[in-house]
Length: 194
Image (tube, rainbow, N blue to C red; front, side):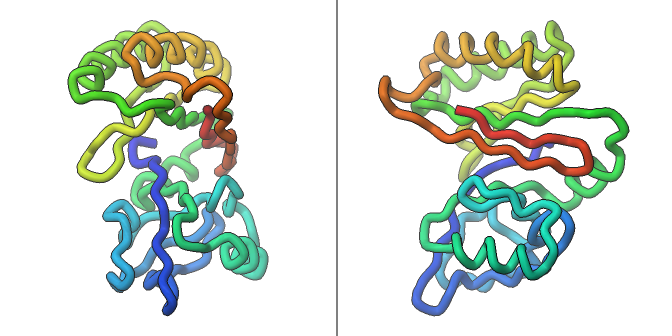
């Protein structure tokens, strides 16, 4: 999923200013009111797949409302994917696949991101997976998304770790831990790993 990304939600005294519609894939963003100002990645036509690492996929409307409501606070991290891409991807999955989002442990410079982009293309060809930078606001890379057959993605993960370390955007500082989270959509596992 090229559109897979994470962003914080903003919530003020009057709420988050977003209109959501429950679906089997979590919440579909129907409208963003603009007060408070939301991250531009949170826009109509995106699905909210998880909030603060808790999957929303497959929940009925009552459970979805409960889980989201309990965790929705200013700064809660949302895992998003474009509805146009997610719907066909979920409907067309016939074999078990995996999508892993690997966030950078440290910020990646523009020069390092360009070199990493080239190395990811080589990694993808060699490992038989898609390996792409995923962006933050203004297309600033915040991590890498690996996708493909489960066993191939798992095998490529260690080489990706070495590439991130080589380019200076690898693991977080020693002693810092990051949580892993995953969401399964019609047999396709979307996973965010440290």
